[in-house]
Amino acid sequence: MDCAKIGELIYNLRKEKGLTQKNIADKLNISNKTVSKWERGLGCPDIALWNDLSEMLNIDISQMMTGELSLNKKDIGKISRIRFYTCPNCKNILTSTGEATIFCCGRKLDPLIPKKNEFVNVKIKITDVEYYITTDHEMNRKSYILFAAYVKNDNVFIRRMYPEQSPNFRIPYTPNGKLYIYSTKFGFLNIDNGFN
Image (cartoon, rainbow, N blue to C red; front, side, top):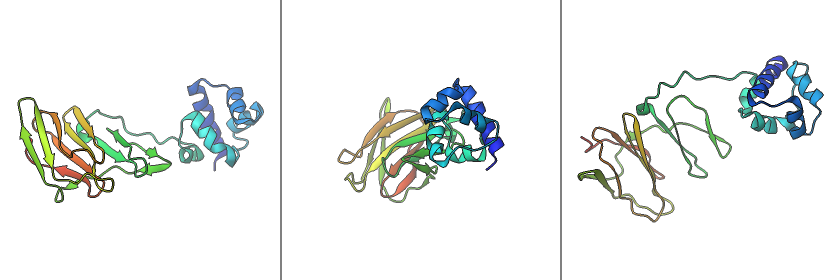
């Protein structure tokens, strides 16, 4: 560990948050001289303090330990590049439109990679203002559709689903988009029929 780089990062993040050395010291139950020592690169935080310090400064512990923030390229805002993530523990659904490091329940999540649908029979009926989508997917506590997402240009429509409910749903009519379904049994599926 490079204490000088870590100290400089702590200093910059502290200033960015508008905190004083005393604010950090009080929250960590240490002296403000200790924080000053870190910021001058004369020592590193004790291992027991890393978690609280990273929470206070809103930084990932692993990045704080390197002393550098790895910045992503500027997000150009193309919704069609959206990435979906799901937490295997709490079933949280998260999205990003660019490179992101996403954690949930203490785990780093990888973006879902859509695969060709060969598992679920999906039928699409078009009405005046919406698509009515029916599936034959089971909806019990062990195997169900967690969410369906329809992506078109600068819009994303996400339908959250739960066990025991109907696997059928409606989404607004916007032709030429992409429909994805995340099944707890089959994974992230690309549904590529009927959206013209």
